[in-house]
Structures are given as structure tokens and as C-alpha cells.
Length: 102
Image (cartoon, rainbow, N blue to C red; front, side, top):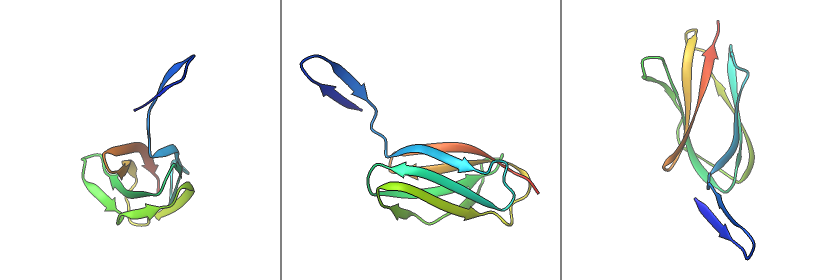
């Protein structure tokens, strides 16, 4: 958390590595697109978990430069169902629900 103080105001702003994590299309049949804005150069691990909590896909850690990032994940072998996409950077993580159709 970042605390900013000036003579007239005090504000508290969360410090986060990513802004606006978008996952589309959702539902998906084929390739899933992950879009976000990295505030600085950041290492990320992206994983997909099934309804039983088992990792069905884990991509190797990738270091993304700051700025808008578009990343495509092919999902050709996944069965239809509901999955959880986890994006992890250090001690921060983000989760999005993904529905796979066939």
C-alpha cells in the first residue's frame, strides 16, 4: 500500500503489479487471450485449474516488460467445463473464471 501525503490531502493507494486483467473470449473454444497492463517489468506465471483444484496447464514463468501485454494461450486438449485462470507475480495473484466449450 502506498500512502501519499501533501499539505491538503492524504490518500492511500494500493500498489499492484497489474492493471485491468482481461480474459477473452469467455466462453472459449480454442485460444484464450489474456490482456493486462504491467506497471513495471514483472515475472508472471499463468496457470489453469479445473473444478477439482488440479492444475491442468501451467506456463513457464515469463518476464513481461511494462506496458500493455497481450498473451495468447492455446487450449486444444481441455474438456468442456469451468476453470480458474491464476496469474501470479511474487506475492500477488489474480484469478478469473474461464468457461471452455467444445
